[in-house]
Image (cartoon, rainbow, N blue to C red; front, top):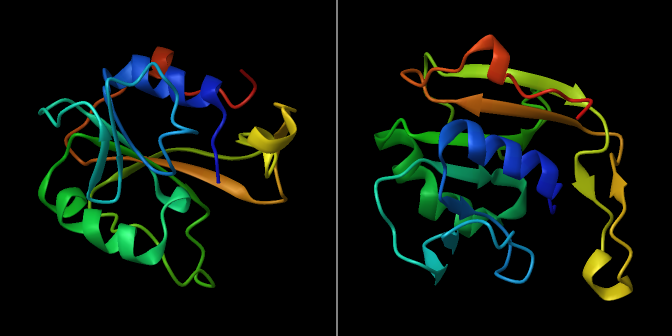
Amino acid sequence: MTRSWQVLRRAADIFGAKTYIGETGLTTPPFFLNSRRGAKLAWGTLDGSPIIVNWNGLDASEQAEITPLLTSTDNWITLTHSLGPEKTTTPPIPSGSKRILQTKGKASREKGWWRTGHDRLASYGMETEVWIGHDSRISRDDMLDPEE
């Protein structure tokens, strides 16, 4: 599921993230210096900078490939559908991590937007959650505003 570039840019600006993990290189916003899909590097090089993970943009094998990274580091922000008990594949959110946003709104692009050329946003009736590692800090002024 392709996330809105406005949401991704705001998250990247707040955390200084330069690496994006999720989807293909065609749908990755160009303002990221590094792009991965699972363990496969699309462009750039991996450095120690914070990463943004679009969990739902990865298939199960790609999710498994990045799980060690998420459990061994603390410099990530993860966007995912709501982590309710009915969900079968959820990101490895370590104990002590913080949910900084839970919202239901138009945070994703319409399916097939790259084929139609229509860059409209949709919600698909799903909630979005944003998680950060336990040692990450965010000021109240930098909180992601679901209305932006």
